[in-house]
Image: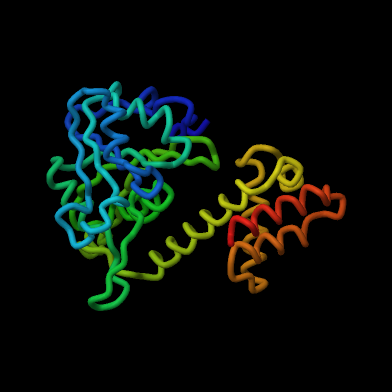
Length: 276
């Protein structure tokens, strides 16, 4: 087993030492968890907690119902962390970060990375609280940010069924500080957003497939099926499919002839109905 990967069925802190002098935060996804503030309160179970809604006091406050929250944890047995590990990790509803600075500075830094500048005076929100996106957008740039606010990330991956530790690579001369303080669109960022959207689409397709179709793609488990599903999605997009319904039609047209035609038809009908 890779020393930087562990099963999602276990707390990552059975493998990673809880840092003595660095705050540990739990970043939760308000898009994935409806009523997130109330959910945090329920997980806390009446215990005091330190949590911040990241859209508050920003230009995005009007859509705070979808805001990410940053919960500062008291230790590996924090009740909010335990609630997340039981319900949210396998669904990729958030991730853990180890701060390289104090809590207030790290929170300000996270707020400054809620959006990306697509063009001068044109900003768009980034779903920075989703672990798959944070792994590339934050984790892939840890050594290049001018302010070292995040030391490392611990992110769940539902495809592999594992936690992944993301640390800054060894800093090369001249590489530190070449990222601006705010996120600005670049070819790398655009590629990360496109990869995230493809991944999200593949998972949506996976959830719509029944067992017989999954078996044809590689097996009943997501980790076995995902490589073939990802390749087929790339082929569909390369063939001009513009939405998930067209991708599904391409998928079923491409499946081997020995497919259970009833299962294929039923799954396709279910998908198209959900898309309407």
